[in-house]
Length: 96
Image (tube, rainbow, N blue to C red):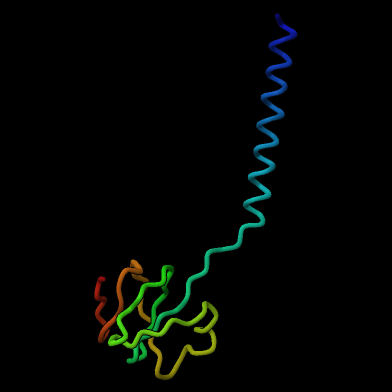
C-alpha cells in the first residue's frame, strides 16, 4: 500500500511541476496589452483598449499605440485615464 501512495504522490508532484513550467512559458511569451490612442478634432487624446464605432460627427480618430511618442506637444492635449467607454468633449468625459 505504501508503494502505491508513493507512486501517486510522485506523479502528482511531477504533474504540478509540468503545469508550473507551462504557465511560466506562457507568461514569458505573452505580449503586453497595448492600447491605441483616440483623439478628437479639438486635440484631446486618450487611451482606448476597445475600438468603438464613434459617430463621424465626433471627429474621433484612432492612432496606433506608438503615435503619442511623436506628438506630445503642440495642438494635442493628453486626457485620461478613463474607463474606455466614451470620449472627451471640451475637457469633459462623455460616457457612451
